[in-house]
Image (cartoon, rainbow, N blue to C red; front, side, top):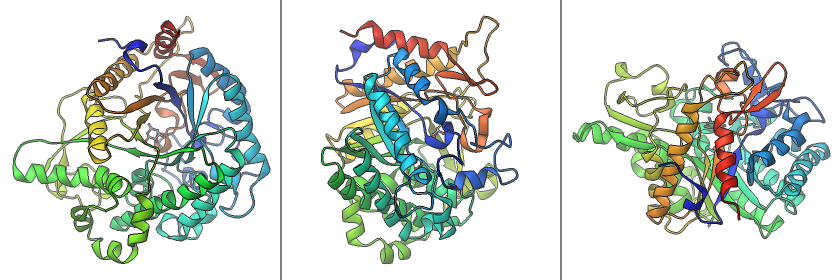
Length: 460
Ligand code: FCB
């Protein structure tokens, strides 16, 4: 069924999302320091098309136009991220005034257009200086993050009231420190789980700093969750699903929502002794301190069966350390250009998973979207029927979850505009709005126009 706005509560938040390194460009301007992505993107072979985020969407210089674009689309909330190295070029010390000013101008511009700012404090651009000191494998990085978060909240708390501490710590830990597909590109095996703890500790230590700097703040964390299915009912396949659900979902959801790491996952990883010594009861109490909402990024599902190391596609063993006896299988369902299976029911599953652990906690889909090789037609339009279908089917799943009583409070489409898709560079387009990277011309795709019409149709 095609969703319409009246299917959702009047207070439902309708937004789009982006992240600093993926859109801003201007990586050496106004005192910005280097981030791990500046370094990693220069490593030969790291980025599929050899590109970097040096220019990206040039959003740093085109910010006002991009906000106007959102206003034209009738979008009411905007999730952006703050580049830590614009605020603290070396990851500590005084704020760089020009960095704060940029985000203040952005927030002012949004508020003037009636768009509510939602700021993510960490969407993967760690200051390189902190990586040089050990990065997220060091506990001290959590303290540095907490200081930074408090500084930003005290500077911008009057114009931003919605804060997301971390985006997808699973990716930061396991793609950054296990498979090495993302910055900083390290392959530390199961020690990547230690980075996960330090990331969650960073979230924990940031919470009181944000709350004391901005007492009215609405603060949460964003996790990427997967709907995980066993290929059969056999014990071995169900155990494979347990492992992947454990590593991808429970390793993050459980400490944040219930105050304990899942023992089975720490055992799978062989990291139980490290966690016993280093993840103290005080850490866990802080990590599970109340949040105002949970952000969920949902894209796809995994179907797994027991396998052998030889059956694993290259890369997956290292992305999922401790899970070498798992095979990810093809179900025959349609996939996006990323190769991610399209499974809207999984969005209902992950919302239910979070609600079961934290009944009543407001949930937001902080990312959901799809990549397709869009082209501008001769008449200047960009028709993207597959993305439109993906969007409509996932909104329909949101509606279904609401009908089942899940406290889903908003949806942010990934992404407002095509952008630098990490290790894929500019070769994957997730935008509702097309970007011509030669001219920086923005063209709303047909999915964006449908969203605009849907949002406008029933505004009272
Ligand atoms: C998520 C990231 C986001 C974007 C989408 C496609 O994992 O948070 O920046 O790259 O995937």
